[in-house]
Length: 191
Image 1 (cartoon, helix red, strand yellow):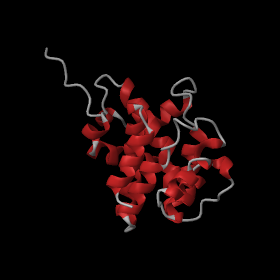
Image 2: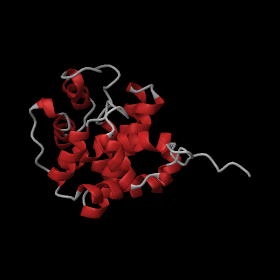
Image 3: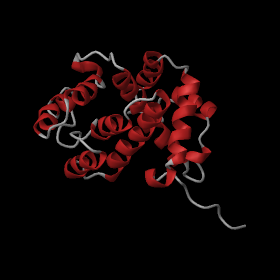
């Protein structure tokens, strides 16, 4: 499956722009890791784009992603990708073994958290986000309360990467695609 075919599935099932941007943000981080690890960038891109494609039709666990997986199978999405998507949900019972599975899990919650932090910055930009600020916001349970901080920490651990390095890596990846992700921010006000 090509990236374009995966994006068409996302657009078919996902109407919410924020959820589409989340898919793109996760893809951004996952593909950056694919590049770093010399992995199949297209396969990792497709996996990341499709990981939450069924969220609007199956918003509750364990329906997501369990009920979405047969839809992807019908669309010809290969088993390795479907397995990684299943494994990103801790309650699925599908273990994370491959680098792709571990990377998807490690980047999912973090990409959402980095997006949320960008939106509260004065310029609403990922370019204003720094590791120490992310770590500080992780301690604030009222901020982005739907983001599971334990998943962020556990994701980096499973990936075998220092948490601060993982955060910095994902920030840099998202900065490179800031405009497409809607995180370029507002231009500074004229003084």
